[in-house]
Length: 102
Image 1 (cartoon, one colour):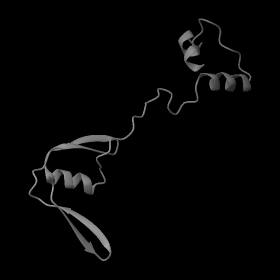
Image 2 (tube, helix red, strand yellow; image 1 turned 45 degrees about the vertical axis):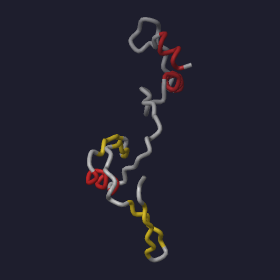
Image 3 (cartoon, helix red, strand yellow; image 1 turned 90 degrees about the vertical axis):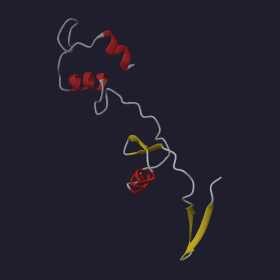
């Protein structure tokens, strides 16, 4: 069991964990990265840099990030008066691209 002391400084309660407990390596998360803190010094360094113990939520990387998509391109071409591409032409959307856009 961890021994815990509480100290009051100018109205703020600070919790101090006693150093008699052996440090256990664990994962820390920050800046979209994960790193294992092997030593207490490394743990304190990461904590000072704003890293924490909570794993960030999973974010899916979309291949269309920053792009408007197939239908936006089709509508833009219609708006500027372009003729649609015919099957077999360069730039004609594949069946997979059409299925994925719906």
